[in-house]
Image (cartoon, rainbow, N blue to C red; front, top):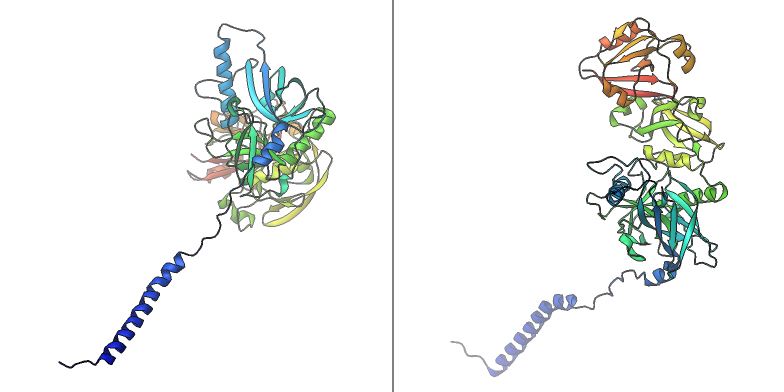
Length: 490
């Protein structure tokens, strides 16, 4: 065995210690990096100052309708009607197991609202006060006032009330046209009667069509703010405490909040408010078309690369659209200089304009782009004419497999519809479902596919070429409109 001198042992020990120290430092370096001081946590928003500033201008609303002829079961009837109203507002249909009531609403409904003028003007939802004969506004300071209904508009679900008070706190009106998905919003209202309840969330989406299908002029703001019965009519606020919307609807399978809430953009509401304050009602422009989304299988015929725009399913006879030259089958891609992506984009743009306004509509027809000048007329929600073509009884020349029979167009029908030549008249409906689709006796079929038909024999010839399962496209005119219907050959 070789011996080691004292000096060698010292040097060997020194170098061993140095190596151990270096290794220990390398092992410790990652641990030291992990133990570095963490950055400060991101603070969540605190809305307490906002709520303290805005809550005094938020009110609770109590709307009462007295029964004209009370019965023994008035309490049960009231509960039933309130349930039906609930299903109507939140699901867009009557409640299960019963029909919507035909008599005046009984009992009391509750909602929210907010003050928009120090002189006592209050804004809420139309459905909160609909059918009532007494409306009481409860202020944050516990004062109560019987309100006068200045006016309301069902199409935008807006109502304007007036209370006899002055020097009231007022909410500032924001700009709903610049809001974006992801921004924080706050709601204040009286869900289930718990007044001045505060909930918060973010904007989920913009431009949503109405759930119940009646408010097609409102591009709703979708949020995930907790909204329940009683929140209706309350303000949706941005982080500056400005009103950007009126809470109006929820989507729910259970009857309670499920993360989908909808608010009327405040610019839409204020347009209605100004008209209501001036005249007591709201007037809006009318284009005169029924539209739907473009289907993917229709792109080849349109020349479009993507399914965008509003497909014109029908054109009201004598309407601005008809007078301008817009036809069923056209695809509206722009209105008043604004691009149309979905069919639901069009009605709010039209409804925002007053009657008499001159604007332009751009359409795609057979792959060609056309722009038409339009002068809007006054929209009348009850324009559907009850006039029908008189029932002549000439010989029926054809019985169609599609569920109806046709005949030559009678002179009286031509006079009523303004058709000088061509077409075949529906003489009889053999399939009840057709009437539900809007096809009725006396209507005139102008085209099958894109081919004009001028006699029952031509119609029969075209139909005989179709095979079982084929989609038959019919252009039909009635006293109200001209539209496209698609039927499947049995």
